[in-house]
Image (cartoon, rainbow, N blue to C red):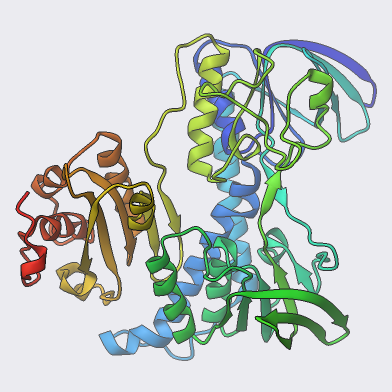
Amino acid sequence: MAGTYARATEVAIVGGGPAGYVAAIRAGQLGKKVLLVEKSELGGECLNRGCIPSKALIHASLLYHALRTEGPGIGVTATDPRFDLGAAQKWKEEVVAKERKGVETLLKAAGATVLRGEAKFTGPRTLDVAAPDGGHERVDFATAIVATGATHTVLRGFETDGRQVFNAAEILAMADLPKSMLILGGGVSGVELGEFLARVGVLVTIVEMMPQLLPGLEADLARELTGALERLGVRILVGTRATALARAANGVTLTVDHGGTVESLSAERLFVTIGKRPASRDLGLDEAGVTVDPKTGFVGVDAQMRTNVPHIFAAGDVARPPMLAHKSYREGIVAAEAAAGRTTRFDFRAIPSVVFTTPELASVGTTRAEAEAAGTPVREARFPYAALGRAHASHATEGWLKIVGDEATGRLLGVHAAGERSGEFIAEAAHAIEMGSTIRDLALTIHPHPTFSEALQEAALLWLGEPMHVARRRADAGGR
């Protein structure tokens, strides 16, 4: 029933995504009275409209594509395999609902209370929560954590409508497949969902303004993926700027400029994925005295995720890049511990990233270019998947793993891989970097055989000049 109510809590958390719900669980574990305010679904963008649903559809497309292309060559045949988007969407929603229910259960077990509504700060220790039924509730808090995540960037003239022009959330809810799709933006969502569409028979063109797909990623990884997408039939235009969009009953036309050459691209639909911005607007943060960067929209925080107002914290995509769920998890834990008075800090040497394409791309730590720009003498070693027994057995010999090491000390600085299951073992490399391991340490670690993770050990041996499963070359002999 609509009305005005009031309650008090020790820790108020605004936003129930990866940073927010994990913060609520940790604060509850520490014995705090926790109130989590969420205006939509628990789990945030990642669980409901991003990471999890996209991977579910990607998995379905992989099975379909493998049956049609890979299966006959390895003795697996099927009569007229079809991709049923409706059935795939139903399964995807079941996966999401199960995960969301799991979050609810974990919050309940931690003793956290969930309040549905849209929160806005009205002062340094108060929130107004507008409930779905029109009622309002005042929340008094001792500490607060802002974990509102990020929203899709909207480009004027390219606004989405969920019918012909889609953002990432809308494309994941499509009821039918078009014959053709233009994708404006070659970042993670663009390449992952572009590959998904291409696998199930959609004619895909990706337009990226920067010189490579996945701007900011290690250049060799981007090149590897570009080649794989082109072999799948995807047209890729990098260094290309979209200048206009025309909508018609039968599709859309995108005008692009490629180094002065103007071209019109037509398709049934357009997917606009040009990034995200922090969801820091309309939260009343100015009323609370919290400083927000006027250019980026990020809420400034220190190593304890504390804002300029000592009892208010921020975590996840709203606080700072990179916008990654696993980074948000850790930040949520740190914010909760700091809010509870614990000695804690967000301190790391490297955050891994994974792009769920084929080949799968995984990266952690420093690239060779970054190290050389910083004046660090480095050397690389690149081990091919084609030398892995597991890769041959799994019909996945395309790809490689590259190690970047400090030439003077032999310390591991970075690992970058393009290949099957690379995202599953990149955490080992992240752990090694966090521990300050040398490449010799990695080479001496016994890896199970046959696995894809052996590529780490083999690349380490190659860097040392002691390769076991590729021929030794004189230039590889480092002798560390």
